[in-house]
Image 1: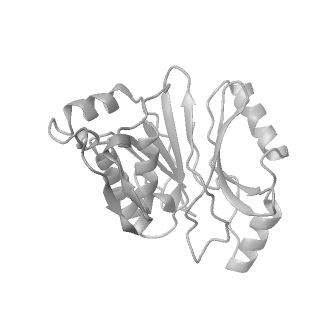
Image 2: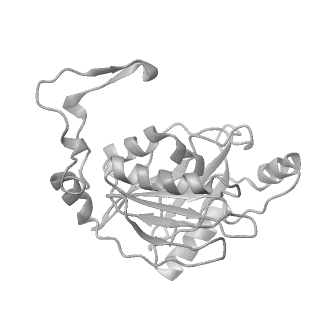
Amino acid sequence: MVFPELHLFADGDPDQQRTEALQDSAQPLDGPRTRELQQLAGDLGIWLVPGSVCERGPDGQLFNTLLVLSPEGELAGYYRKIFPWRPHEPYDPGDRFTTVDIDGVGRLGLNICYDAWFPEVTRQLAWMGADVILNVVKTTTPDRRQELVLAQANAIVNQVFMVSVNCAGPVGAGQSVVVDPEGRILASAAGDRPELLEVGLDLSQVERVRTEGTEGINRMWSQFRAGESPIELPVYGGRMDPATWTPRPFNS
């Protein structure tokens, strides 16, 4: 069960009051809030993503952190938002990409809201073997229209499932969406009213699409041939190496 970004936190107005409220509500990753959510997941016996929370980092940082809790009540993984929505958000950026393995099912990639606007995030998670990428969102602005396009685009170019979960009105713009590896919308919430989407995902589609190609044509992850030279990427100070291009499979 997946909830939107900052689902447990209210918005204050103006911005300074909101920032102070978020600072005041921040707790360490192993604090009482996380423990209570772990107990809830364990009591219900479900995988629970309670949106993201305000985390007080080990050196006093303020992180926007996505939690994944197992049916056993364990903290299975967490992700600190790498790209805060600047200049509007007060968070410190995270510094690492995160996937979580669901035993016997598949691998989840984690990101938060504005991360979806940076294609490198989804590409890295797909390369790390994610079958499904969860993007929890708190978009209150008209650019939700563009985010829906990004959900499809990120699914298509990485051949993964995208699950974009936005908060409903009156605060958010709603319109949560689930997209398959070929960019087809499997389910969507109409408008900004509260709605529960229940969707079954056939994760074998990821391997099928990557093997057979999108619409039976495009196989981006099979682009390179053995022995081809790396491609320099000056914007990153790095390169795209054919020898390491293929995604890491689940259970690797």
